[in-house]
Length: 437
Image (cartoon, rainbow, N blue to C red):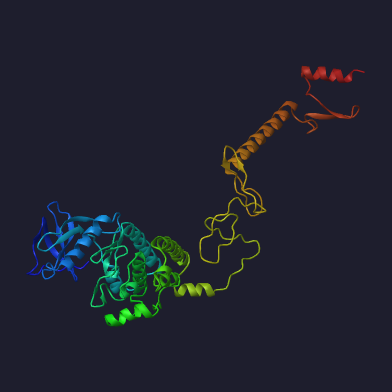
């Protein structure tokens, strides 16, 4: 909300509140930013000096205070203090930070369908509390709606009226804002909660288009269009247009209730928010191995090179069995337990440990530890066999029939015999054994 410096004619202290800035001025008076002794900030409204003696304006001001006291909930600014008997009656409400709906749309442009529906749902719920208190606002418009961090707030109940009362007129002119008044207000008929529903529909159309549904012009022209012409809803999103048109029906009986309006707008807000999330493009992952820009175009135009027969495919991170990388540039996800068929998960061996992966030929890769064990066994067996052969040869003694000096052929027995040299005792015994019959 825009703030202005205090003017020379502005008071500096009202009641127990010290005034700091001007927040705005209207037909009834001026709104100031003030604070109490504890530092609590308030929005303090004071009747203009020239209207303080007018009993009608005093009554209207008293109705605003009464309405603020009766309404419960967070849809309005909470009443802090008031003095209706002062020379210039005033009241203070809790200060609501944030711009008005009128200023936000004027500065930032039309709101999205999801935002319009969300604001409309909160305002509809607030009007339920207002109407349950037996109050009709009668001047609901974008400048009387503050967008606080905790949600929209309805302010300025200066011309609020009890349910069923007739509108205030001055020489046939309705009190309120042209373009947001309901037809029954223009005609001087009784006001009902449906009167605020009409104003809410015009407010939602303004939020979605940054324009009044009845155009621009003098007060007389605007009031005539409200009563006799259909609203112009060009630019209102399709999701909201039927509901806004129903709110702007000429007959109050044809307008939806504030409760129906709140439920319907909540549904639209949720659907539109989900739609915005669905159409949002997914975040692209940057692959450091894939070029970008003009290099990416050249990369895409290169023909795919075929590998020679029997050449193993290049190993890529996360692939199983050397599968070819994805053509989209994204890093392929690791295959889970692909075997020959690729449909069953890999078996697990041991105490919950995964079994070793298979190679592209279906065989399991060599285990280095198992190879070392096999090599050790092979060497040990080889040594034992060699030792056994050597021991066997040592037990048999020297070979027979090798030379003339140490052997001779026994023709009778058909085998070689050892011929010891003469003079040897053992040789003589051996010879005597051979000569025996």
